[in-house]
Image 1: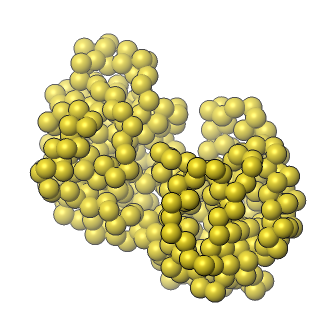
Image 2: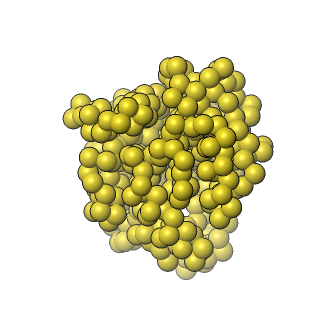
Length: 377
């Protein structure tokens, strides 16, 4: 088959969420792609340009940016020129009129569940194009059972059309013990000797304001380090509790340095109210960090019983969880001992093999339920 994959969302410095998924998919298909021919759509400057590619994989430069009206004209044109048999949209972007079969990966339904957090353009784009593209797709892949249930219920998609292919944890996410490397990373990011760590962004559903309120209320004495853009509103919350001096914003943390940061922190916390998967808590567990997460959406499914859970809408309960995360030595040791084993169950190679099986099933006109059985995982 001639398979096209959209990787235009990949940009330097954007290696979490959808971008990470696409990067790992393309990377793994280099080894597991079989006899198929792959065309990977990129924008100029893509990180994939530095990747060594096999003879059956080619980068195709697209002029239009990811999520734009003009892509609705360019994508079908590229697919016709390449004589593609199948187009994989690893996000909610797909051509309304596709000259070939299409499958989509829908990571979550943020745009529908939380429309107030998105621009009118994105809301309109999702309502007009995405819903219709989902209906016309041969198959829908998603990254958790939570998201699968949401897609089936909200979009009225036939269950046999939706398959779960879990995200993975890269092998480099392991506990770092080299004291020189740890000190090097600590110095680069000016990290305190002890700290609570949160890797996130400032979107409202990430719940950072609630986290800072809970941290300030908790009575913890060690600093809170937030790896997200600076927000004066967050500091004003801490200031109300006299904790402003204990809340720090980190500059952007390079992907290669994250395992060391996870290894340095006393506690990783992820208070998000809505996640299709939630990769950072799993990566933190792989690095031996105790974890506090919100009891919401997909997070309990992903971390299993290897976390301390909190109600993300109750700052007092979140404060309780933070104190437990710091002081419950039995729970902390259990997470440290079992975190890597648990995280190792989530493999990018497995995700790529399952995705390839979906490609082949769609190419042969088979239902994906014939390959995505009960023993899929």
